Length: 402
Image (cartoon, rainbow, N blue to C red; front, side, top):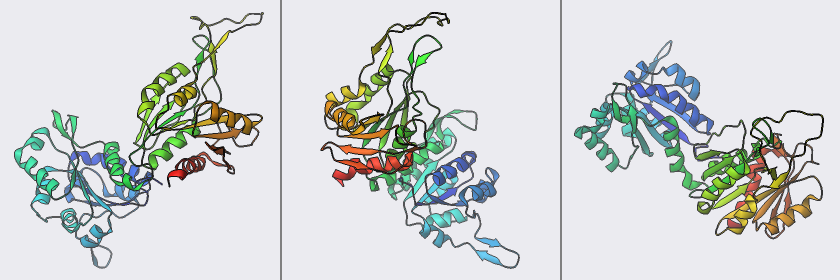
């Protein structure tokens, strides 16, 4: 569950060129568990089709006070529509629509819905730079702010007029972030920052070969999505992988080697509340990396290895107020090794999994874990999807604070 899960978002679209971006925003709302209904001004249909929006939102799109079927006209109840919503977002909000809102001019269905709304109202302005900077527009925006509405900032950049400056509607991802942040205080990790490492590291042998492992990063990515969905700002430091993040509250840092991962973690770690080291960091790296590809010969090849820096041990040594969780993937004596690692590295908890369990470990979509807390209390879970495992892990982490 995330900040928008189950929320009812009423989306008002006015007639600006930025309306072409709105289908992507509708899709993102739906992907984050929201229910979306759309009301448009008649001019907005010149820029984006009701059919596209209805298909994505799975709800009828309205733009007039009445809808005519085969027999009789039907009244589109603007009051009921306004009362349905948990939040009313107007994007893009043109200078004309903003002016009408500020002065209670009710000349289309969108404005009638707005004047009936009792829910929070978010406004995403979109217009040319001179229109945005005009004192009348700024006065109208100030009035809407005084009404208690959330007037979003505008972006700076290339505009439809060919000019460049302030006036662009925020990108869909930015608007999504604003709404998620608004609803996030209801979530258990609201106001916190979580650092998660994920995936393997690759330690170069020569320009084309490396030492690595089979980690896909799926467990770490699932943890990142779960933390963000629970309201956290997430720093995801990940080794080589092909995965994508979904939640806009995840800031991703891609690295390759253990040394690169360490430097990134070292920079971020002092400013986080929780850290989960899910990455499968290489324990060793070649002592000497060859500048050219090593050619195959008849005799055996010997590569001298040296230890990589122990990132988790560093985090445990420099821990202040953070909660620090590690992972232990074992092939034998799992409980003994995991408990020992928890103590040696000054962890608050450790997630044990073993390759002996079918469906657990690297590259799978499932995992089977035992969570061990700092008091050595062990809680085992059945085989589950990694998304479900991530929920179990955070339930364990947050349990003492519930």
